[in-house]
Length: 370
Image 1 (cartoon, rainbow, N blue to C red):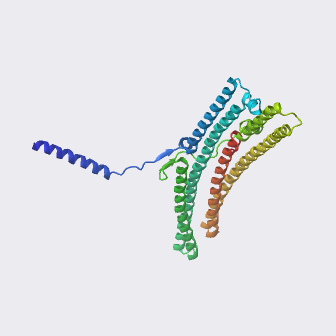
Image 2: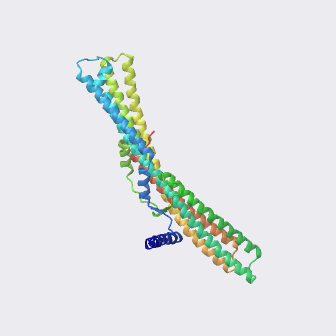
Image 3: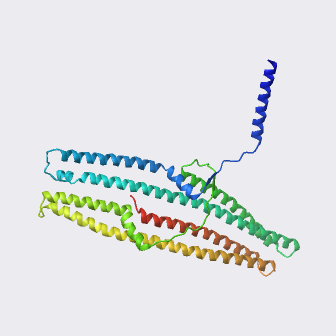
């Protein structure tokens, strides 16, 4: 009995020791690594809007089945209504209308997926941009720290004024504050990405995709023609045109040309034809504008890259001049600020360019969904 008790105590002590040792060992915080592609998949998978869309599609499928049933029931009966409603049942107008509604609902789901991709990408780029901005701010801090150290050495040697040292230390304090703010902005941007992905807001993320400009090629003329067929607004208008024409055809059986009903239905067709013409023009206008936005954003990237290189060289020359006693600390500080602004502008330009590409692709393939 004593041996059994001793054995139990030994096992108990061993377990306690193991638990305490484990508790004393630093554990790595769970961090979710996430590429842009994986983030898009997660956003689509977790989208509550897409789940609602699936339910809306199911409703449209039921409505289509009901319309087909009503038409079949009418055709199988020997009784003819001899009315416009009867002609429309005979022409499958109810099922055609329900088919169009189902097709449009499915396109809306595609739009939600595309929109989710855009929102996730924008949030992901926002986090990358915040991280890139933090790196720029840290680099700026290193430049200012280096300049402050040089001024301090000169001041100790009696060849720099007290005002220069104070100016350098003020700039250093400002740079440190900017670094802390940049870190906070990174956390905020990651929280916004978690929100977009429907993750817990405190989820730790490690973004694995690089912040770079995406490749883009397009055939503008072909894309405009494609948009005429694939955009939701054009598909919906064509559906409405078909239904208005079918409504006219079934009404014209009952009403001759000299009746108000005939003329009213005829004018509805003319109105739809004009809307289709105007919408085609609007679609082309929209796509060409978005294409121009990409071209403009691309030029801005090239300009921003050139400005960064000029600013780097300008800072290098200013530092050399100051070290040689030929320049002022204020000139060095201004050059450091110019480099800082140029690098931030480059980051913004890349983000704008990538998002402009997404907007263009969405305009070609989905368009506007109300």
